[in-house]
Image (cartoon, rainbow, N blue to C red; front, top):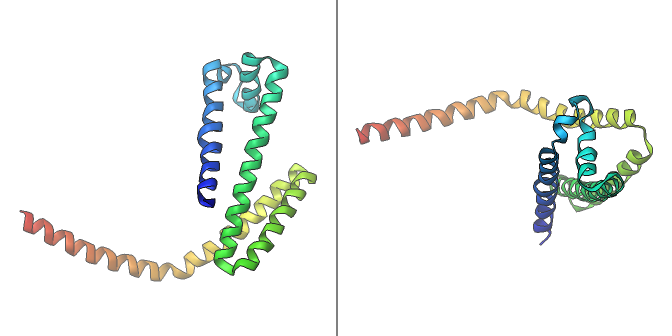
Length: 163
């Protein structure tokens, strides 16, 4: 049941909220009225043309609240499951604390700090993967060559039998 709920949240976030927002922007023509430099103003302008400024602001706030809450829950869930898979159940609980601390830091930290922190985290993810790719490149090449040799022999034999 838990996996179904997570999947449902992803569907609601991505397919429903984002698609409906895009359709409102397109159908109201807000995308033609606002330049690309002020793209963040498209949604408020689109909703304001339909509901008026005050109701549009409230509606956007509610939608954004639910979008953020479901996204944060999904990220925490995925992070916990990844930690549990790699290091065991105890570490998944530690990761929950790390994510909650990150939420607090994000709420009180400045935007510049958040971007730098996210860049650091991305580097922490990318560097081990790049090192692994370099260290395993000979083995991957060998396995890939072996696979294509076997696969090519099988398809070549089938083609000859067909003709």
